[in-house]
Length: 367
Image (tube, rainbow, N blue to C red):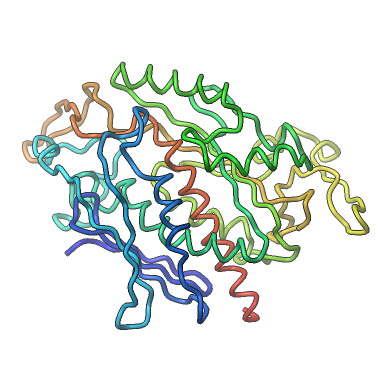
């Protein structure tokens, strides 16, 4: 039986199941308001952006990722995908050798033989597909409320894209450019920067290595007042599910760690009136104060998350042989992304949508 992971939100509960090489992977969704159903065309569009095997900077594993929706007997919405291109034999030679920076060792310690080694099992980046299934519905419902979530590759291997803070607090041209990223093969604002990033990815691929990067996310149309103090803070709600995305190792809102280098007079966001509404003259806070959204066009929610280099690389690496209890080496020959960052962009959008939609549903119910 495949392993499962459960997200318990304020209203929404998600149960993701399956493994990288299991027959199916999917998600059960509980807590959707009556009458809410997926727009399957929009779901398919999001899944296509995440799908593997579409270009040379992603894994050669090809999956259609066609989502099947059905109502489960217990009333939950069930969305799932049939895996069609699994190759567990690629992992036969390293079953007793934990891959560096993978979850192989910790999963073995915690779950024993229940933890599948093939393709990383439930810890694989493949499991972001069910998250996108649930996130697609959240994105659709937020869009109906006038909320749009846009992510793009901010940087890869030291090459930077145009960013929100290059144009803050409000630049309609940049907002339009962000809205077009989802239609691009490589999800950047500046195509020139994207070409340089692709060169870095190709260099890593040819040298049997990998590179990581940073994704910037901007949430436009957020109403003021979403979130709360301490455990109900919007940053915490978003961060919790962003960290559920494999490879994410850090998140910062607004100016983030850069705030530590500034004085209060430099980091503070002055209040001002815009069209007779109170807003911020700058947005170093990332659109959130005290865990609560500021709202308004000049104060969108803004955050960065960093993703580590794909740990599966073709180079020889040091590890241990658990069965023979000795130091050894391994070479990984499976199908892997030289850089996961471009394919993670829609995943971050989906995860962000789940967190915000869940919190908004809770507040609409007085929770």
